[in-house]
Image 1: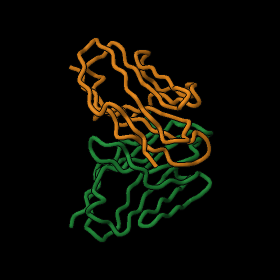
Image 2: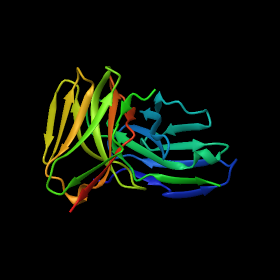
Image 3: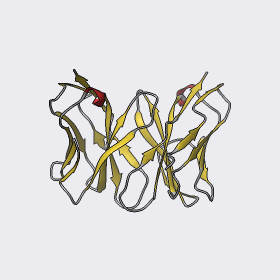
Image 4: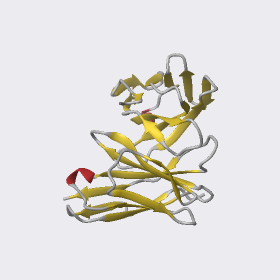
Amino acid sequence: KAGVTQTPRYLIKTRGQQVTLSCSPISGHRSVSWYQQTPGQGLQFLFEYFSETQRNKGNFPGRFSGRQFSNSRSEMNVSTLELGDSALYLCASSFGQGNGGYTFGSGTRLTVV
Amino acid sequence: DQQVKQNSPSLSVQEGRISILNCDYTNSMFDYFLWYKKYPAEGPTFLISISSIKDKNEDGRFTVFLNKSAKHLSLHIVPSQPGDSAVYFCAARGSGNTGKLIFGQGTTLQVKP
């Protein structure tokens, strides 16, 4: 079966711009979670969407937002980009209930210049 | 407040020997634990998981042990192979059906031929 697909793989943006990242989960998975990985902070949870509703939220400023569509695909948006937003952004999909694997995509490498 | 800690940033073992990676947590409400393997610029790959109601789970060369009283889990890899060289993350999930995982900082494993 197809894995979790994240697009684009790489992005270069200028400070102050905004960016949208996309995540297509494994077919049948209803939960999509987003994580930010930086060298200093490791993997940090941003938010989770389940059945088009935000179910959990991490400690990130309001510039980070997301949404989920009826086909479970999710987008993450970062507005007013800062240099510190440069990171690998990862999404993970799961069924959203019970125990099971959380499958990650390959990530989007965002560089803010 | 780091709820999941991997206190060893790196570990080096000889091929064929056992690798033991450790992880400590502080939140007794975590109900599910996972181990991931990660290469640079890629998403984490799921290895093995364990529910908080168990103390051991085994899958091929990988075994995870959970000591709830000590709030400690470990991943054993036997025998270690050079292809196991990567960064290993432990992750914990809060109780309930949630896609929010809390990750440790990772341990870099090097398996020498």
